[in-house]
Every structure is written in structure tokens, then in C-alpha cells.
Amino acid sequence: MAESAVLKPVRDAQRTRAAILAAAQEAFSRTGYLDTGLREITAAAGANPALVSRYFGSKEKLYEAALADLLDARTITTLRREAFGEAVVAILTATVPGQRNPLPMMLLASADPTARAISHRLLMDVFIEPLTAWYGGARGAAKAACFSALASGFTVYRDLYPLEAFAGGIDDETRRWLAATFQSLID
Amino acid sequence: MAESAVLKPVRDAQRTRAAILAAAQEAFSRTGYLDTGLREITAAAGANPALVSRYFGSKEKLYEAALADLLDARTITTLRREAFGEAVVAILTATVPGQRNPLPMMLLASADPTARAISHRLLMDVFIEPLTAWYGGARGAAKAACFSALASGFTVYRDLYPLEAFAGGIDDETRRWLAATFQSLID
DNA sequence: AGGATATGTAAACCACCGTTTACTTAAGGG
DNA sequence: CCCTTAAGTAAACGGTGGTTTACATATCCT
Image (tube, rainbow over all chains, first blue to last red):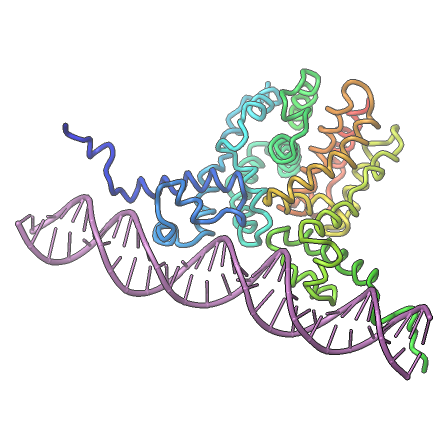
């Protein structure tokens, strides 16, 4: 039988790089930056630690690539303004812990000065600034900050330090309070 | 001249222990748990790395002692309910980064599984539970969660990933929004 | 087909860290 | 005053981690 060499080549730099990136995202989101070893990441990707140097340059660069691939303000800036609060809460509560969510990764990496600097810059460039522009006006930056604070805080007590009220499905009152609070940044 | 042996003894276990604890709080709040070495802490305290084992047992125990010394729900539960929102904002904005604030320490330590478990337990026992009781009623826990989320989020974007809107003195509109949001958890 | 090149591997290197051990020195009671 | 004990020190140990080096092998073009 002809094996599908095109679909599953034994050696494929792009695929290997992508596998390492995906494994890094999973691992960094779960065990942070400092506590995640390159040997652990590459083992999960079925690759070799030395390939991180080859494809990304260093662990820091790998982290930067992993985070940049997850950060995207459009998840928020494409929502309709009329039902903004409800939509945000829907997104927040739909997100499964550890599944392509940049925030735990950022927070778990914040202990390392270099990783934090990378996160800070990426956060500003590809999230805060677009969000500020989307809010618009003189208070756009302040609204973006308030939005980020509440959304991040929710994630902290849902994924990092789970509180029953957030980690186990939230009740209708809480959902309404969150939605109304997010909405109040627009009205 | 008689040197004040009572005020500044050369060898004093209690004083040395306290110095290590203070240095640990400062260092853990600044560089996290994993990235802070015992040699660094003890050097700042003018002590020896081996004394951590003697006085605290291990690095984990030192972290636990350092965090427990900072966590206290009474900063919140002693506020008057009528002007709760304003009072909370006053406390949040008065807090100088890195100065006896348990939150950055908790967040920066969250990458290490053991340190996170310690933080989680302490947080529940000496903060969330008292706060839940203070709010009271069926939704006490949910209110405590919402409070913690917004307060933590504010701290994150003030101390960890500084946004101009929070890190450089906040404007009156933002202050009002925060105060009103905190107050809405009571009314 | 065959050699040049891209891809992957294994092992070593070097530095750091938490902890333990053996030792030195100051403090304090009889 | 001496000697027991507490307090502090220095160095070594075992383990780990990022990175580099030297090497093996699959892939691709002529």
C-alpha cells in the first residue's frame, strides 16, 4: 500500500515547528514559563530540544511566538455594541481552561522579567491599543483598562485560583451583573 | 562608649527570622516564587541560605509564611457599607506597588504548583471565606468572587502589566466607574 | 543515482538552585 | 570562668535546565 507521504511526511520542518509551537502553548498555559522545560515541550511535540534553538532561536522567542499566536483583539472588537455585555460573558464562560486562552499563559509567565516584558509589549500592541481604538473617544484607554481588569480577574478566579462562583457554571444573577458591568463601559 | 547590645544584638534568632521573612516578601512580590533564589533572599536579609531550612523548614514553608503574613480580609470587611465603593477604590489606588500587597505575590507565584496550592488554600481561608460571610446571604460567595475579580484585575494592570489608565493616577470618571461597580455588589 | 542540503538526534557543557553536612563562633547560666 | 547550647557560616551534593556541538539520516535537485 502506498503510504500518504504528502499527508504525513517523516520530515517536515513546518510541521515540526508547528507541533513545537502548539505544545509550547499548551505547556506554558498549564505550568508557566519558568516551570516548563524545553525537554518537556519538545517531548510532547515528538521532537528534540535542540530544534527549539533552530526554529525559534531561544526559549524566550518560543514564548513570544506562542503568545503572539493566541492574542487577538478581534474576539472582542467584532462584537455588536448593543449586546456587548452578554456577548463578552458568553465568550468568557465558553472558554475552556487552557484552551487557546492567552491570559493564563501571560499570568503564569509574569514571574520571569523577560517573559513579562514580551507579554507586556504584545498585550499593548495587539490587544490594548486596538481595544482602545474600538472604544474610541477620550476615555477609550480607560475603558479598555476597565474591560481588561474585569475580564482578567474573572479568568484568574476561574482558571488559576478557582472560586466555585466562577469555576462551576455561574448563576444567572452573576451573569447579569457581569454583563451589565461590561455593558456599562459602552453606554 | 557602651554599644546598645539590647537594641542591636549580634545574634538574635527572632530578628534574623523576621529579616528573612521581610526580604522574602519583598523578593517574592517582585520576582515571583521560582525566579527568586534563597541565596538572593538571605543576602538581602544579611543572613545565610541555610537558615531558611532552620527557621522555616523549606522554601515552600517560607513562601507560605510570607503570604500568610500579608493576607488579611479585614482591610475590606471593616469598611462602611454605605461608602464601600469609594473606600475600596481609595485603598486600591493608595497601595504602592510592591508594598505589603499579597496579590502580586500570589500571581507571580502561581506558576509553581505547590506555591499555587498554598496560595489557593490561604486565599480561601483568610480572604474569600470571611469576605463571603461579610457579604452574607445566598449570593455572598458570588459577590466575593466578583469583588476579587475586579480588585485583582485592577492590580494586575496597575502593578504587573501597567496600563496608563491605572498605573498613572486614575481620572475621576474611571474612579467613579470603579466605585459604582464595587458599590453595586452591595446595593 | 548521488551528492548537497535540510532535518533530526544524542550527548555534553555550564550554570544555578534547594538542601544538607560539618564546622566555627557568640551567648548565657552555673 | 568555663562549658553547654544556640546562632551563623562555608562548602559540597544532587538535580535540573537552556543551549551548543558533533554527528546521523532523510529529502530533493541535477
